Amino acid sequence: MVLSGEQWLAQVFRPAVAGMSRARRSAGPVSVDPLRLLGSRLAAQVEALGDTGVLTDEQEIAALDALEEAGIRSSSASSVSSSASVGAAPVAVRTGSAPVVPREPLGPPVLRGVLAGPRHLGQLHGRPVTLISAELWTDRFLVDLCTDPGPEHRDRRARTAREQLEWMKRLRRGQATERPNRAITGSALGDLTWEPRDEQGTGYRRIGGSGESGDHLDRQRMQWSPAPPADSGRLTLLARDTTGAIVLDAEIPLPRPTT
Image (tube, rainbow, N blue to C red; front, side, top):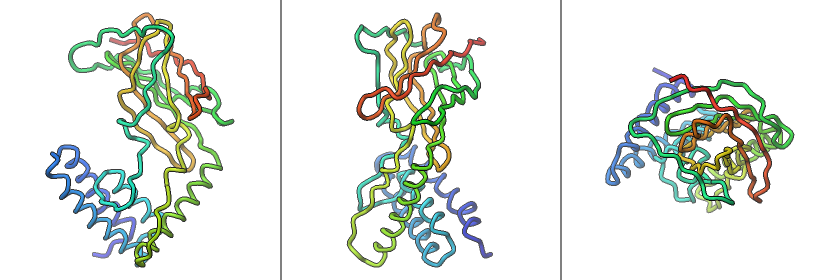
């Protein structure tokens, strides 16, 4: 059976990456290397299909990026950080007074309420930031935001994709070349440090999150612990850029508990 490039990605590549990602998350330190070996073999198939024209340039780059983001592709070059990485997420707490840390409940977290969007929160570099949803749990709260990254971001992504493709072609020809830095495209929301505040001065810590960055959508889903105090009606969410300047100051109403 002959498959088109998109059919191969859908029927072979993506299920294989998903399966190896699940195996990697549950693997011990001894079994990670075989997964990376399989990832390297899968990368070789992607590159071969790209060389023969079965995959387009965009499909080839996206497939190789997926392997690296899943952590199952060996690379001799420097690793690229992911905007969805929880471990590298900035942590911020309120300063100027001793933080109030409510006792976290025992047992599994329970969803108590959801505030559905869309809700306009303000402007970031002249473009609206929208609250998709806010979730209140017994031990945490989550905020889901999105914005349009803008035409400058799209231009940088296109230029970076071209540089990455040219680098891969030179690498296959055996030419020594420095790998381009794909991190320069950045993320409109993911590159900021987010700091929630309430009237009680609760000390919140970032415990997770994920990001999605494309040509027309930049999205961040962030979670902090503990849950806001019961008498808090809203949170103030501050965003700071790399210089420490506040670029967004938004109020987020807390969902009403339903349990």
